Image 1 (tube, rainbow, N blue to C red):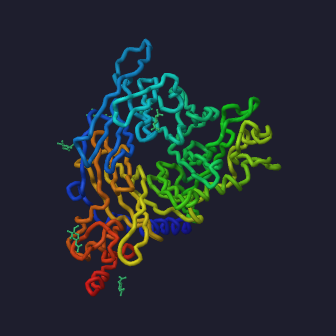
Image 2 (image 1 turned 180 degrees about the vertical axis):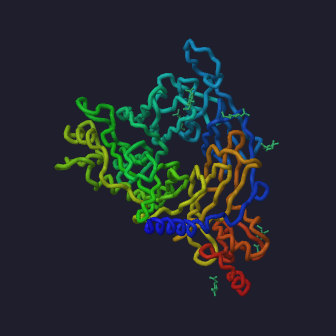
Length: 518
Ligand SMILES: *[C@@H]1O[C@H](CO)[C@@H](O)[C@H](O)[C@H]1NC(C)=O
Ligand SMILES: *[C@@H]1O[C@H](CO)[C@@H](O)[C@H](O)[C@H]1NC(C)=O
Ligand SMILES: *[C@@H]1O[C@H](CO)[C@@H](O)[C@H](O)[C@H]1NC(C)=O
Ligand SMILES: *[C@@H]1O[C@H](CO)[C@@H](O)[C@H](O)[C@H]1NC(C)=O
Ligand SMILES: *[C@@H]1O[C@H](CO)[C@@H](O)[C@H](O)[C@H]1NC(C)=O
Ligand SMILES: *[C@@H]1O[C@H](CO)[C@@H](O)[C@H](O)[C@H]1NC(C)=O
């Protein structure tokens, strides 16, 4: 009793310490942030965002519509309506008109002139190639949208467009929970066995380009019900699955037109010493590194106590588990080539390898965060989306910093400095006039703009907006915002200039005096 009370007190102490610095240093309301806004027609229950061809431009998919928004040249912005392409000829009366909409669920860039767009199209999903000028639309009849585009606008359905192939993980039947992961396009059509476990796909990422392109992989992140090893945790678990982009499916006898390189591993996020785990993945953002190995996967998780956490993994660490771990529940000699290795023609793989992939697709080892570390951040805030930017700071050293952009359910964004030890919440940005649900966010790293969408508005937030930190050097330095520095007269966007004064690490404004002395 005494021990558990002490433990409880320790817990409370720990969290009061761990969260003491976790309020944003400043709150910047809508009028304080450099913002441009664009109103959307309709009541969009899902928003897809895609970077446009020009700086500060985006494509936005919503309910029955696609918008091109050019925030630099508003007169170039336009909107198009999707015709309802095919009506489900069921005998049910069209009581709910929403059932006949082309709600955009998938939006990718193909090349300079074409987009790839899918929508619910009633209950008969459809995918089309659409010219970026939004004039010309080719919806090929034989394109198997089923398995690429979700049937229901509410369903998360991550996908990737890679070398003229589409990789997607969606429900293929509204009635039951049969999720499959597919590839459709130039290469052979490949699918996973239909999986009836209760699961949801969250995100997809390209793991490449690797030194040998044959070894390129696609990682899919999903949550799955069950497998609960932590009674205090939720009943969800998070998994990462690999497939080779070179996969051609198995032989005529085994796994024909089915992935032969599909392996899964648990993705862990938690404070191991304290047995505090975050089991349910909410969102993923990949920060590209100098090469694929160094690319970092930021996972936003939650637990059943309403806490959230951010854990960071490297592509190399994920790859290592797939290449070296024992296979779960398998004792014996691992066949050669090792199951999950990418090969020139998977249709010629020995039956023993195909059989192994079919029977033992799970790894024994888990993927742990970078260097076995604890979460980067633990919070009581209801974060929903994560994006990560890399910013070159000013002042001495001018090193790079990673900045997390986390959306809150209330409609705000937290701008967070990734920092050894404690992350620092630089600011809370409130881009909307009223509290609202954030549907989606998109980062344009080249221009340092963040696009935030509610169901009725898309706003462009300039992450380099520095004026509002104050008129004094001290205010600017204390902000610890790597996008900003003091140029001698103003708090302004960090430039290459040697005169830029800043101390992102400590926010110690004694650098202001040193600056004057120079
Ligand atoms: C928009 O849709 C949501 C959810 O479907 C609904 O709760 C809300 O009342 C709708 N708003 C308007 C203005 O139609
Ligand atoms: C762009 O992609 C579309 C659709 O696949 C194709 O028809 C077109 O030829 C491509 N254009 C270029 C310039 O590659
Ligand atoms: C879509 O899913 C939601 C929630 O699961 C459900 O309420 C709705 O009826 C579904 N819509 C259609 C058209 O199936
Ligand atoms: C914000 O809320 C107020 C009061 O509820 C309302 O009058 C106003 O129209 C809303 N503004 C927007 C932009 O939705
Ligand atoms: C500092 O930045 C402000 C605002 O961007 C600019 O007007 C001013 O000329 C800059 N001062 C110097 C010394 O570069
Ligand atoms: C700030 O920097 C000055 C000069 O380097 C140092 O003397 C001082 O202790 C620092 N203050 C804090 C709070 O770290």
